Image 1 (tube, helix red, strand yellow):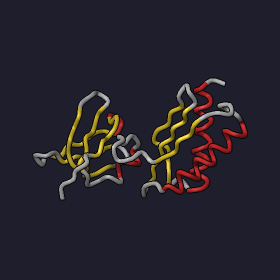
Image 2: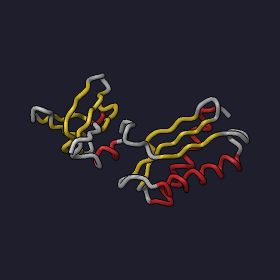
Image 3: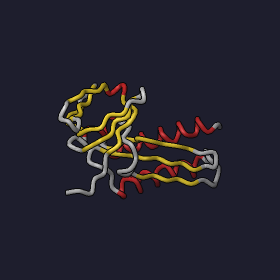
Length: 152
């Protein structure tokens, strides 16, 4: 079985578990399966993700990997939340960060900075540093990075 097929099977197992056990509160935002059998899955949720959710998902995936032997007997599995330093890639993540300062990277390569003030199903609105409001199409957004500030 090729690596792409295995990766698809793992994602199907993970998504099915998250949907059934947590009623679509959590979703996969990133995944990777490397040639050296390292599986990384990042999940997020409407209200964030707890360690317990990551652990339950990890154990569920692990039981399938051990039973089906899609990767053989030796592999490494990591399931976690993306962390504040990773870009937001899923529109479901954008909504929970309204009010924060962000950097938006568009598919065209353009970069916009500002305060995220609104997210709809099709657009997001930013207030730039000079108080100008701009609207971007979600279809054109590659990712959003939260600007971390230690000021109060």
